[in-house]
Length: 411
Image (tube, rainbow, N blue to C red; front, side):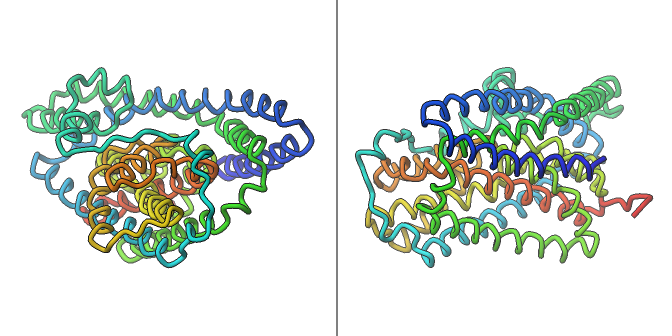
């Protein structure tokens, strides 16, 4: 069944590109735009269905996972190991993006059109430590955070609740049973929603190709190609680390997460792949308590693809406008992005807002945002898929450190 579903997903991607090309080629621009708008309705409905699942799924799985740990010390131990991996992976991701964009120089020689770019600018605001703590970390209302699908505040609240349940002598069996039942129900709902993912993938790709066409790839070939080359290097390092820490069984996990990767790539949303990634990790053998703890944290602290894109795109814009950033400024940028990216949601276009904030901080032309929006959908697909890979590897490695990888009955 899984193999058949994967076939449907790949087929949907191919047909989506073909249909989009046909619409772009044979229909007038206004009609092609109308067709793309209608197709986008399907993708929007699908992503909204995913978003309605995320908050209760993250809360229930995280609370249940923490509550099943031995004690608060176990929670702290796993948390320290998880954050150590996240910080290390973040530094590596940001550094690869920084080094590669300096080496490839994709923005050199690109003629900027400030007038055209200004029409598509997105205003960014400088994110301070105070704003991060009071706005993106500690929720003033958990209901509000859930309504807005703000994963980081939900994670913080869930950690408090799960730790409290684990600290109670009888582990509040009624509450724990309820949370586990909610998690089971939400996973079943996820299965229903995911059955429509091939249709959503087809619509998403057909819509973007209908309006942009295939020619757009040529104009930004160096930028797009350089970024995907950088992602390839990061994937290689992540998979190498997975093999080193987990052993030969790592290839089973790589095969197991192909569907979530394809879904994230096609819909340009890491969030859309969350339920499938959680299921794949548990099928691989990562214990439920570790997977339910590490994966939600990863969606706030370990978006490797998005972080790499922030450095790559920011310096790309600087190169376009001929602005040279000193080494100290680039190091400062890495530190700034280490903080601002932690409140980044795994949803489309979140990186653009972070980039806009970074441009404002370094007094770079924010009109440069308009120059990357043309291919941002294509780049968002790659970074979303990378986020899934990074969080899957992180969950497996932490589970290996904790001795919480179970060998399935049928290897």
